[in-house]
Amino acid sequence: MAARHIPHTMRKLIGTKLSPNFREATAIVEAPVPQPGPSEVLVHNRFVGINASDINFTAGRYLPSLEAPYDVGFEGLGEVVSVGADSKLKIGQPVIYAKFGAFADYKVVSSKSVIPVPSAKPEFLSLIVSGLTAALSLDKIGEIKKGENVLVTAAAGGTGQFAVQIAKEAGCHVIGTCSSDDKVKFLQTIGCDRPVNYNKESLKEVLKMEYPDGVDVVYESVGGEMFDLCVNNLAVKGRLIVIGFISGYESATGFKPSRTATLPTKLLSKSASVRGFFLNHFWNDAGPVMAKLVQQVLDGKLRVSIDKGENTNHGPFTGLDKIQDAVDYMYSKQNKGKVIVELISEQSKL
Ligand code: NAP
Image (cartoon, rainbow, N blue to C red; front, side, top):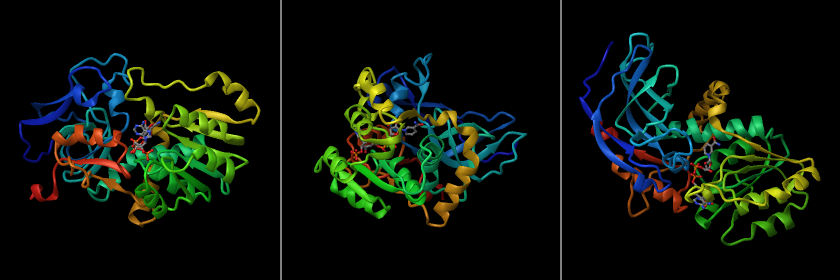
């Protein structure tokens, strides 16, 4: 096994109890740096990505048998620093991966699960969960077609920004919801045809007046009243993709019930459907889609907004100690694009 100089210990963020309150549920500890097995590699994390579901994970909603202490974090980008005997990856290769326990200085990942990327740019990290979710779900579950209307909720967020651009690329008309004028401006820069700041305009009125025949596809990640409103405004044969329901995640139950009793009538009367999408069920389809997304980023055809919290009091998000601040930042609805925490800067590597 070839290796670079690697310390014996590292820091990582762990869950110390189960709670949707991420700050209360997590703490930083010292731990031994793990050793890769024969078909694994050790990645020195440079960036880690924040996801809305980080708090679902600490609440115990992902793994029913989860008990403290447990590792947290879904995705990382870093450099391969040690490889197992059977791994063909080279030391120094920048890679991205999606694996539980990414919020650590170093992470062991199976060679098959890491995806080599051209450079250690955080834009590539944002593709593995946020980008793939948008690309795969709009195609396989939303079945978007040229000329259709697509409504994207939380459109200026980590995955929303991809949904907007991918639907535009497919020739759709895109409506995007967000909570500020600053985000409206951002949505205009990525091609959103009709950004709606729901704090200023009533989405219900906009849909009624400007889209009287309804919307063909909804990329819905907010839940609660937003879900109800979207169902009510589906077109004949419309498809609503359930991406998430962030408005409920901070609550103890994790779910804000909507008026599901009337759902059968609403769907039947329009031959419409509500369909779920969970990325973990689609990894077998991810390879070619990821290759396309990486190329589009390289070609400048896919614009990725990375938000390291530079403009907030607790930012920029640099170091493991800032992960809790980064999660709070996302839940304060301020982020534009993908929230990322930088663990080691290019400077400190020299
Ligand atoms: P994000 O969109 O970067 O950030 C969350 C955004 O949601 C906020 O900026 C805010 O934007 C909006 N929001 C609306 N209501 C909110 C509320 N009550 N509390 C907090 N935020 C609220 O986050 P993300 O990680 O990309 O996740 C977005 C959604 O996609 C989540 O529902 C997540 O679970 C889902 N997701 C699902 C999958 C899957 O496999 N199904 C994969 C990735 C993500 P505005 O203020 O502009 O509305």
